[in-house]
Length: 227
Image 1: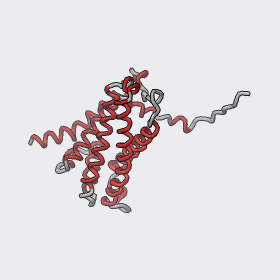
Image 2: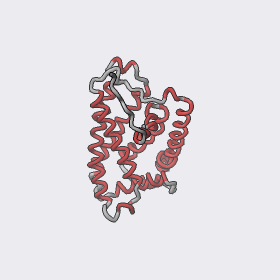
Image 3: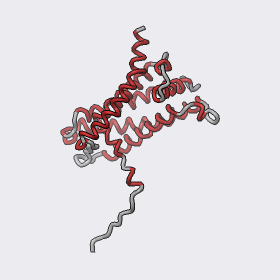
Image 4: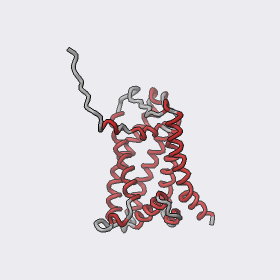
């Protein structure tokens, strides 16, 4: 009885608390904390390995984000005519595994830099270090789930996780029931992911909202040399 209650609390109600804090917190941060709405880049303090670490981390995490977004929220009937759940899960294992490795390597380099480079450490807040550590842990948990997924290549695990995510996003009802019997590693991965989203408005991650898409449609700028 207690386990059922905890399951529904963490995976049925907690996601909606997270979503509320994520949206309202981001809006309030943008409205009242404009001067803190930034990436807080430390590249000027130390450039050693910065470009490599940042590129690996961002390529990996963006691939993981869009892979999860498309993979979990696309209904089975959309791809069923040309792709089985098992093949989709195998694609997710390969694609997610490669992206996860890039993210872990880049994230570990960035965290090491934050903790052990004196100049960068002096300019880093507790939340800066915490969010990088959590993202690194989340990517590591994701890589561990790959080994468990290899034992479920029929696609059943993929469908259960997708059904849970779609039930949450589209308000289908008893979402937590889809995770009954799911290995603990998947539940930990989901819980930590939700917690990162919960902390999102209070970290430097808010700069994600400010993707400069306007550059794609603006007019060309003419730059001339001085005579």
